[in-house]
Image 1 (cartoon, helix red, strand yellow):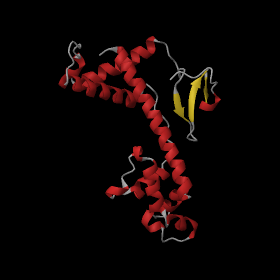
Image 2 (tube, one colour):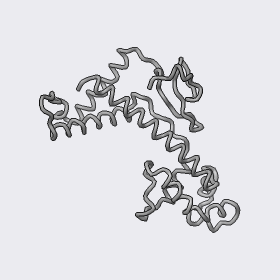
Image 3 (cartoon, one colour):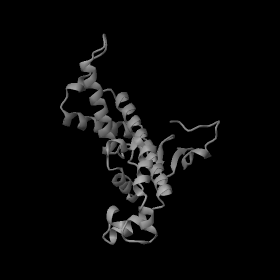
Image 4 (cartoon, one colour):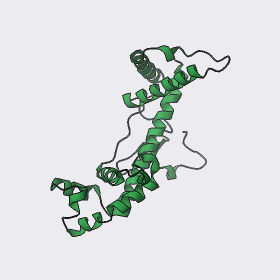
Length: 208
């Protein structure tokens, strides 16, 4: 396994995760806007023993908003098809998926060298190696880790990534790193502090 390959895979997976979390926060804001409901509204219903179906019979403002919840849920699912909320045309229960989306809190992003990111990066390399073995390219080098045991691959990959991190003496966020704050806003680490993308000078963009 080439260190550069693992580093590239970690970068790709980490940035994809940040983008996914940002997209999910956008979907939550849109769902709150079209339904008029918040996580607090759903929590109060559930704490009182109600769910999506029974909550419509409670009465009051919240029940009124739930009357058209199915329609709004379809709207959210169609607006954000990449989030896996379901396909209304297949009869998926998108109302339940959007209910769960609304009730969840902000999801903090994992650290770049967390097991979650490293495992996903290694899975990506594993699948790429397996594909290359089935579709060899002339004069391309063999990929030895493609034949390694899965447990050994993960153990070696984690060690290699953490060794590279220590060797480079990177502590804390790096220039261009991104995260989602508690309010669901995207932040970029630039000039030694976290900033919103709109704060970045067009002549000095953050490195992504």
